[in-house]
Length: 388
Image 1: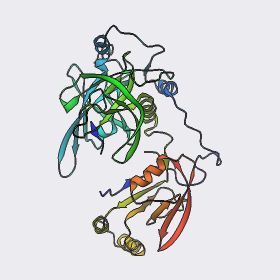
Image 2 (image 1 turned 135 degrees about the vertical axis):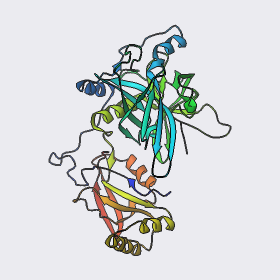
Image 3 (image 1 turned 90 degrees about the vertical axis):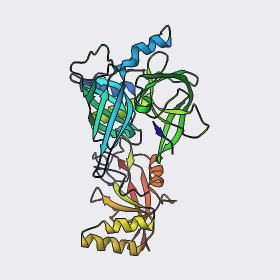
Image 4 (image 1 turned 45 degrees about the vertical axis):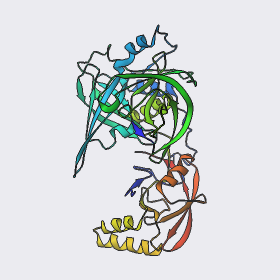
């Protein structure tokens, strides 16, 4: 389970973007469509791709929580990951839910931070069988990821996908909340009970703002990606974080089910979550002079090295955000631009820029003030949809 809490060489504001041009839609400059995806729409789209996702028209009533858990526990899985680089190999664990099913695959939803940078992913079912998983896509902002495993040879009546509520469903403060997951990475299938403590809490995890449910249903490291269910067995959220402060107990968070469904369906269909605004650049964040020296010394090409020497000289080695690449040649921002402010707000870190974009919309025009060649320039940029 991820805890609420630098040199980041490449802070990605957009990858595979279509640019910063005023005509961002390719339809003659018309305003982009408003994203209004809800559970029914998302599920219908997946159905067109022959992927089945379960929703209910009415809530089922169980005689006890134990009866309900017996019906849904097999839809929650354990996840093991191996992260390997040139220097070391590490392992981690989390949880996931069986979200959808096709002719030959289960689609498993978990947290982005569970499978982030994983070289190998394994999924373990409640009967102990372990399956190699394939990464589909993930989204840092919503902390949702999708992976798949083969469903060949698996009893699909036993290992059913989670049940999603319909669009009219509303989670209320005080509703029963049942968390099922893999705490400590070794206690798969653990069940804890609590209530929904609050709705629409805004928290920041590793610089990313999220709106989440708060619950006192116990969660621990390894629960991340597991299901949070109501008393009817419907999925109401995906567990993703808790407060790690001495003396604090019973404060845990989950991604609301509508966010889960919208994000997961987008990731399955197109590999990214729709409707997120982007400037259309990548940037480097230089927080200290040591960061600047490390970046400069890492450049092997002499012409590129000279270019960045001149850039840093023109800014008097200013620390902050520099434009590193521009995804579209028509964008008026240029490589080496030092971002001073956006819409009059000072920008010193990637978090500052992300926070501003979180409050913006695709198609909106923002005013970016930069230093270029020692001169101040103000550039209007029309925000495009971020695609990863």
